[in-house]
Image 1 (cartoon, helix red, strand yellow):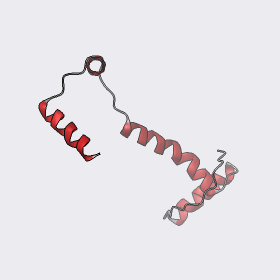
Image 2 (tube, helix red, strand yellow; image 1 turned 120 degrees about the horizontal axis):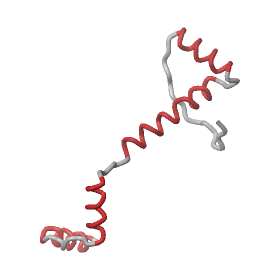
Image 3 (cartoon, one colour; image 1 turned 45 degrees about the horizontal axis):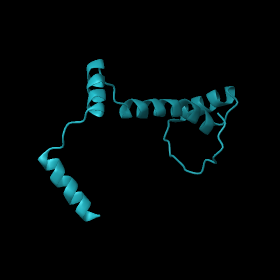
Length: 91
């Protein structure tokens, strides 16, 4: 994994001696330092976790409803008009 930004931040990781030995051995087989070996494995998993948490999956019915509301938004309610006026007055 080639990176252009220098790694300057640190994360402390506690392991058993056996886990540390295993990581060092695996990294050596891959011709990587332990940090690069760990980062290569965990960054894709971190990206997947964030992506799953931040993505909203809609059913076909809900997708069509959202599109319908975007094309024909409902009239603003009285409460929304009051809130918009308060917001505009603060500027």
